[in-house]
Image (cartoon, rainbow, N blue to C red; front, side):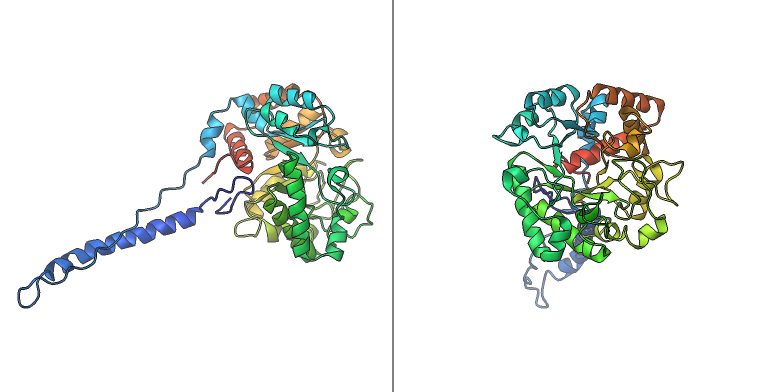
Length: 406
């Protein structure tokens, strides 16, 4: 998290540069003390032989400790299968708390996703039983964007769509809305919100992105997405920017089938600008949010008709060009025809994990065992490497506030 405060634990990570800077200052002071030593000794007596006043002692600060990665030891405590399970976020039925707890207990997944309209898991402190069923704290995620994409509106009231917020409210007011909503989510046991959308779009309001986008202007999207993300962080909820590399000017709805976007060069001039401004080293949301990849075919980026969520080049673009080092997850692999028309859920999951996703998301309430079996086979076959698997698990654990990678 590069020196930022974690939204849940409140702990602060020190950057390597800060640590090394402290050590260099300390070293310079120590060196200065050694050089000064003989000078002080020669001045121990004055011209008349009388003792000269002693110089005040110099306080030398202790050298700062080297950065410590506390995530890899935690990863090492997990079995191979449990490491892979941390990389899955699966659907549970919010109307069936007991069934949800059984899924968590048996599979040891790292996260669950609550879709639909049922609220049993979100009332009367019921979510705690779900956390109690897990050996490692769960990421409990919902989609809470406002407008037509809300999860707790029947419980805690309605909030405007992103487009309406940008049209009617200041960024500061949006931060306040997001903070209050995050506090409401957190009180109900939700720890992750798969929002905000940073798609740049002028689509009609009810289209696939439409009013889920703050604006068709990249700068406006950047301002309001940052306001929302910082607000929900203040409310104690981990946020995820979506849908990389940009769904706002796509040809259709990935729920319904394959979707293409303008070429990569056009996305970089518009749709990708909020990511360039918000994430990566030194950016305002660096280390504070995750990123979700959509199921998009992008000329100049993806090949062989593969959507971005299972395409290694897209993950390299996000990591290498945009410098993002946080959690990267897929959009839903189980209920979107851009994926399901081509792959079963187990194959889609392993393709996403091997391509570079830290977390494979599926909203399906389905047995998790086959997904883990397929992922274990992919690890054995070398499609997923142990090093990449451990690094992904470390990022997942850090995103939940359980450790620090530096």
